Amino acid sequence: MNHPPDFPPLPNIPGGWIQPIRQAHEEIQAAYARAAAVLQQNDPDPLRLRFHAHQLRHHIVALLDPLAVQVARDDWLLLAANAVGALIADLENAQRIASRRNKSQLHFFKPVQIQQTGWRGRPRKLIDRDWLADAVSAHRNISIRELARHLRMDPKTLRSRLRFHGLHQRFADLGDQELDVITRHFKRDKPSSGLRYLIGHLRQQGIKIQKERVRRSLLRVDGLGQALRRRRTIVHREYISPRPNAKWHMDGHHKLIRHGIVIHAFVDGYDRMCTGIRASNNNKSETVLEVFLQAVQTHGVPSRVRGDRGGENVLVSVWMIKHHGPGRGSFSWGLSTRNTPSERFWVEVGSQVVRAWRCFLSRLERLHKLDVDDPCHLWLIHHLFLDTINDELAKFAAEWNAHPMRGRGNISPEDARFLGRSAEGMYADDVQRIHPDVLRRYRNAEGMLIPSVHLTC
Image 1 (tube, rainbow, N blue to C red):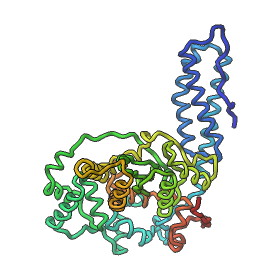
Image 2 (image 1 turned 60 degrees about the vertical axis):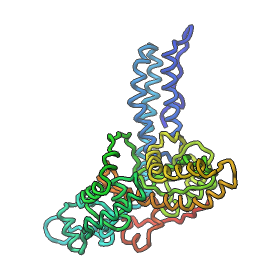
Image 3 (image 1 turned 120 degrees about the vertical axis):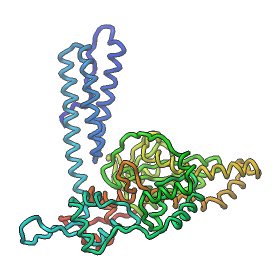
Image 4 (image 1 turned 45 degrees about the vertical axis):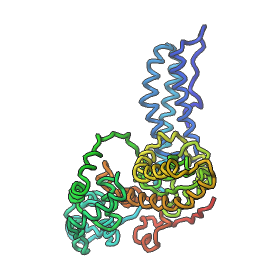
């Protein structure tokens, strides 16, 4: 490391510096300290290193220029410029090292094998039939063009491989009347759900229908509701996560807290996959850890987790640090309002599940003398309805994971995870959940052994 440990203080002058100069210096000093602290981690996140280097290069340097004019001391300017420049260089160098280290720990599926034919022209590309069958199955919505781009081949070549293996992207042989019956039943259970959730619901049933047919069915069954739900598109900030299981976002939903019910969930930042969700009758850290470990058993161990500073998140943070080791940012704290993936997810949980239960429980209070201050009444509510709420949450999570996403080519979270595992790589904890026969077929060229992982705290 070539950067000095601290940003140089302002030179002493009689009477001291005016407030704007002190404020600018304090802001630069704080940003410098935050960036330097990241470099002290044992295994820093490459994205965090890139973020701090970008902040210094584009924001702090822009603030340093007018500050240097006001200070008007060449010796101090030289120290300040050298410190910031050295820190940026160290951050960028550390990012390159961390990226290489991170990539060396990944395992890549190779569904495409190159076959040398001995003839002129490009070598033949062989696609594993099982992987291809999964990619074009009825519960997925990956287009031929998107799949060809992922496999780096021409769509015509991909279509010929599909024909060779006897695979087709067939749509369900379902008439309009039969489709309308399914749509009507879905709208009866989920009156506030729209096109994308209906497609996800159909996909969960193994029914693949053209999007336009589903849209027309909704108009026939619920034309007025479609008109009422039209809203202007909301532009969200871009969020980037490098691969599946790179970072999970955890949060709690407290809209039913009046009735002693809290919902905890985990969302993968890369593909927006809901990896775990459960309603509980408490907000204890032991309960949150249990939800987390169940998600880990199904989806693998995330490299990092982000949550707010609530006490219920403490045991998850301890488990992550014990599992991955200290000093690498395995658990990061932040405001839940800035937790973009999970906050968007909670909006849907509220509209699809929680709102109806909130109205129902409020009606029990208003009309049937439910007393939320009576522990016996709350116990009865939990005994009668908690399992049903969790069944609805599980069904919602399945439909969420299968619904087409805007801005991602209308692929679902499950599709994004499926493609991301082969394109961006998998962590060792993910690889262990794959059948050994599949690993032998897809393992990387180095044939790396997979270490054992014990999911204990």
